[in-house]
Image 1 (cartoon, rainbow, N blue to C red):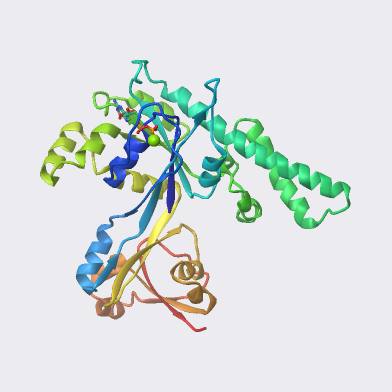
Image 2 (spheres, rainbow, N blue to C red):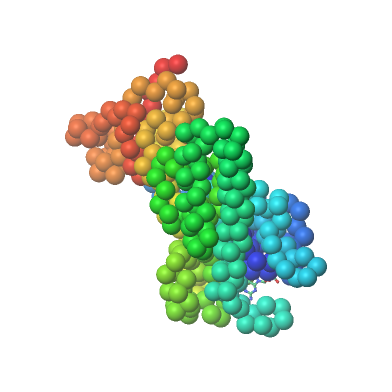
Length: 355
Ligand SMILES: Nc1nc2c(ncn2[C@@H]2O[C@H](COP(=O)(O)OP(=O)(O)O)[C@@H](O)[C@H]2O)c(=O)[nH]1
Ligand SMILES: [Mg+2]
């Protein structure tokens, strides 16, 4: 899973990035000229993997990972108008999930924060860039139609794009339309930004963190939102585990920045984990809810999807309840599943295949 941190300049994207990764990318005031994004791959700590590793004692234990990308974000032109540089948009399009960082602390000029307005402004930016892509494609299709190049495929594409255009023109997000699987497939190549799950990170100052219930409720009417205390949480990395725990309790912060964000990101992107186990390796894999066994196999290796025969399967919970794989067999909880089996969170799979 790849999560892009986006937001207005000085909203605290890099600060949050550092809080998530324990890195020390430079935090700066009032620059948007960052040519390269900060990228970090972090493990998703999952107690189940830790436990599986204790059971199988493999030399290798591999957690699922999440990649965080911290962007240059919006740039301001000479009139002070903010917009996304093309390079940022291209990068954003390639990510699974967007996390919009909204500053909730007075800026360097001492001006009060306006998080609701900031969210609206950013949403408008995303919407406009989708609208441009949508309309350009519709124009091309119309031109093709005039030249007699209309096909059932272009007609279907046009229908979906019209739906999207109507939604965007009314200020809606593509995620709100509820496109079906086929429709989504038709337009997947456009990588629409408002078609990606969006998480709001309210980046509050140390002294208001935990006291923004009204604001969080307001944002929560439309979006999934989590609150961070960016600067404070970034500095936690310098402390010992014990001190960290004390400070977090003191502030009422439940769980590390990384855990809170990955949990929310899993939730909004409907992601789940399945596991592969053995004496050589215990490993977690990330897929979307509703994906069939053959696609899960493909995440491990394309050969496994191509030559898929059966998935040998049992659940993590059954393994723990039965005490061992033998126990799982004895209690009849071991299953053989076909290609179309919808993988569940916590499934332990072994793919039988032949190529
Ligand atoms: N008070 C306060 N200041 C913050 C917080 N997060 C970021 N800042 C400050 O805002 C400025 C911009 O932060 P940065 O992370 O570089 O923002 P970016 O442009 O979105 O990457 C820096 O001076 C930070 O110290 C926060 O949670 N509280
Ligand atoms: Mg930055």
